[in-house]
Image 1 (cartoon, one colour):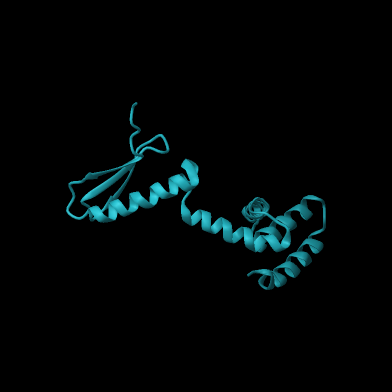
Image 2 (image 1 turned 90 degrees about the vertical axis):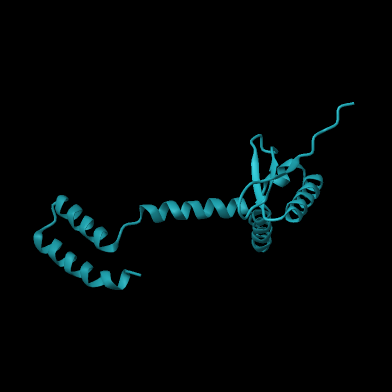
Amino acid sequence: MRQMKKPFRIKPYKHPLLKFVVRDKLTGQWRRKFFKTEREAKTYVELKEIELHNQGKEGVMFPSELRVMAQRASQQLEPYGKTIDDAARFYLKHLEAEKRSVPVEQAVDELIQNRRAAGRSKLYCGHRQREQRNRAPRLQF
């Protein structure tokens, strides 16, 4: 019977500081992680093999810090009956709206131009322009 290769390989590495490399091909492409000592490399491999055994290939490829962030965010959203997906959609909408946002001064100028194009009098537009310019500093953050 053919023996399975181990998913992680430790090899010596020629570098002034980093003396060992751990390689794996779990994602389909070779990934490398470098260590100063063989002990550090072996410890890393042991942890990754345990993680692989417990969580499978997908679990190893998903970074632990992201998993912790997702868990924390999920707990924070739970009292509101919302999910991480709901929060992401809401935040993306917010970012899109923010991207379309323009400075107050620019918005006032566009408003005055639209009013002039609509046939409003110079007196009306001048009064509105002064009024908006006086309010603009209070609207800026």
